[in-house]
Length: 246
Image 1 (cartoon, one colour):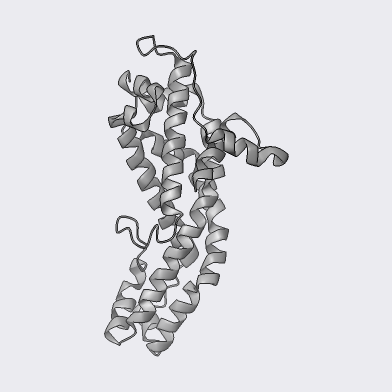
Image 2 (tube, one colour; image 1 turned 120 degrees about the horizontal axis):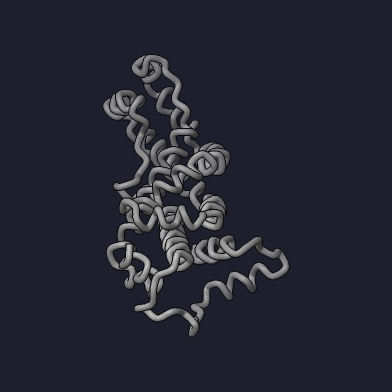
């Protein structure tokens, strides 16, 4: 997952060369000294503010993707764990009472596995959004609410993120057995589960995609708040200058 942060950083500066990708990634991961950087007490320019916001966003996104895109990233985190869709809660509660609880557990496990598999694919979309951010956008984020950057991502890239994740989720649900698990629950109840839900269909792939994206935004917002509260802890003098002068 450490390469995700490097990929985002590279997306900010241009396209990746296939022949030198490994070398570029390795170089991007190395801290670089900047002896010409302005002193902490110099005036903050719009360019500084823009660069600082982009740096903060890259940090927040890469950390969130690494966290949730790892094994059990969703499953063992109660803040973002995917549960059975609300429309099916009555059904799954009945399934547990009928002794089919293991199928409910398998159902939830497979949804969470699908979510974690889809998250890493969002790195490129986020990277493009950061690269294309205008100075005006960046200044608005600096002066905005504690989750202004997260709101920016939702507004500018939400639909593209969903479009990127949905086919990966669809493939993962088939591989990890979401549909099979749901069918097993239904079969074990003799069709009672479908009747209890009123026969309403649930788009599981879209549900998993939406919940996975909600979890990702949850942690991006959390990281954004942390950076605003203590930018020096993020290891960047530029971030400290930007968010101290908002």
